[in-house]
Length: 160
Image (cartoon, rainbow, N blue to C red; front, side, top):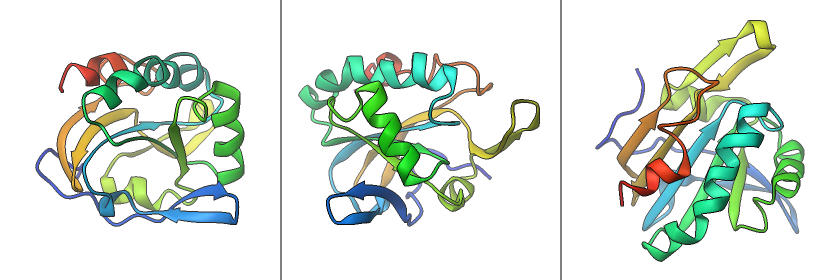
């Protein structure tokens, strides 16, 4: 069953590479209002050419409306997420790209899927959400992982 509005995020041990090595991030423990978006895979066309750019374009507008952080979750390892953040400019835009290395967080959200034809297994569906103190306020979930409309930064921004 997929997470819905009004529910608390599950505990997470998402990963990022920091100055001291791999760091764990628990999105459910963050206070304030945050934006989270999930992408099927770093360096994939829809994620690199549509989804991430939509949040880079709108990052300052989210912050101006009181969003304390913008987080991208993908089922990749932290080395890939760091390289992808640099390649897309997400790091310069202040967007944290987090690795759900084993897909456990994605499964806990109920947002996992396989796209065998594309070579994608155990990936996250494309989504965007606004969360306050760990509780989902808004969830925009795409029907198809190749589409980035409901989950685009511009659309989520309208919810604020």
